[in-house]
Amino acid sequence: MVKIIMHGCNGAMGQVITKLAAEDKDAEITAGIDRVDNRENPYPVFESVEACDVPVDVVIDFSNAAAVDGLLDYCVNRQLPVVLCTTGLSEAQLEKVEKAAEQTAVLKSANMSMGINLLMKLLKDAAKVLAP
Image (cartoon, rainbow, N blue to C red; front, side, top):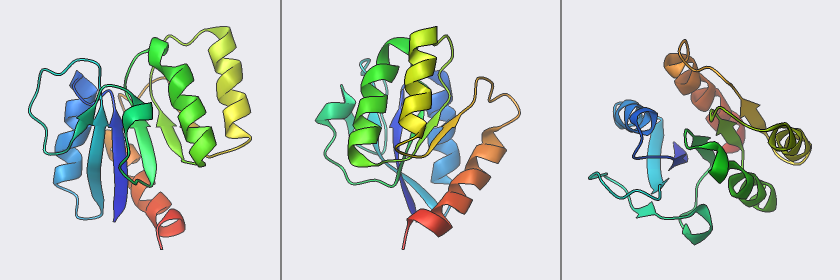
């Protein structure tokens, strides 16, 4: 089973992913990250990714551009794959994404409208490679 941090868990897309993961026997969101604590979630929610001490296999990010730099540092330092779906990144941030991708797996998508089902398939495929 793929253990996931849902970065931006209390936003609209974070809640969609939370519901989809709950229906998938091969995926489990084991922690969430969000500065806004306005929802009930079936997993612990941390205000910052640095505060999260839950072991996971991958991060799914649907947060905001201001949170991406810290997330990329966290993922690179832990060699943690990230599915980066936040839009509105600056040119400097896009360069940072490229550099991070040289050190850990990064799947960046600016548009997930087609893709929640694709995202879940990618997670299943990643689980075969990443999780023993």
